[in-house]
Amino acid sequence: MANKLLSEMGLPNSIANIFAARNLITAKDVFSLTEFELMELLDVDLAVVTSAVAHISEITCPPYQTVRV
Image (cartoon, rainbow, N blue to C red; front, side, top):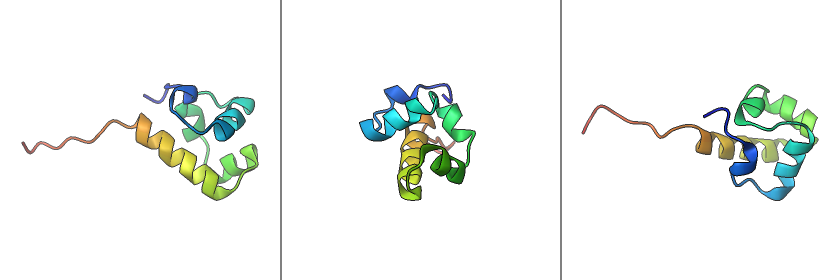
């Protein structure tokens, strides 16, 4: 799932274009950096980075399952 393309995740165009311009193509590329590193690399506010990472995490991570039925 980490190799899922950011372009397929429904991010707002403004942030998706910034990710693409900085050569961050997959979720793995984003998750390999801290939020502060992303903030510096993308030159955006921490709130924007946090929101984008949360959105990417929500789409990338599979839903949890319990053993209870």
